[in-house]
Length: 117
Length: 114
Image 1: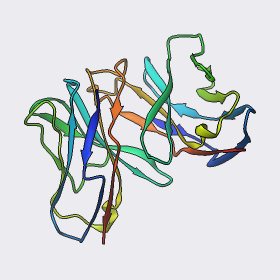
Image 2: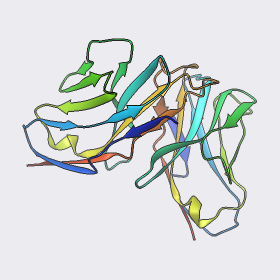
Image 3: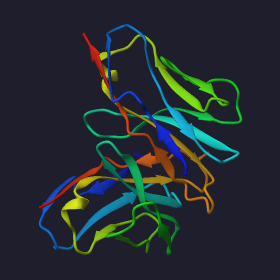
């Protein structure tokens, strides 16, 4: 079974500091994608960053970057210069061509990040 | 504005009373999907559709039905809701098959079944 594990249910960080959210996954797919989604209090699901597994270079999007360790099946999210607007639930997700190409995303259980002023 | 819309956003109902949650996208996307979000479980796929009249079960389809008669609409139907279907529901769409296409999520529907 494809699984995504987020072992940190809650985290807290001071404004302007850096925080890293952990994610590990398991997949039998040879080609797959990894994602981080942000869910603020509005409940909207917002794509933060994504990584294609065959690309060795870690993805970055402004203050957000990932540390993709393929052999270890690890995909952590680093948020630099944390801002109050970063307060949200963060979901790690994986997806690939699961027999029949369902376009299904497998989600972790989420990490609730609180940015403190 | 390109978007996925869901209605209603909030719904409280009673056990056994049939309901429909609508989902519509204005991006001409082929692929649409329904997820439910529960605390400690993340999001799980209920049903998906790869095109008009093509639908299939996801991981948690029991108690749900869907239809795809038009490309833009993908309603989720609960014929006889039960309390264990109390959840936050998301509709998602993407341009095509494969996760190279970004999935766009609707704003969510909070359903409570008493």
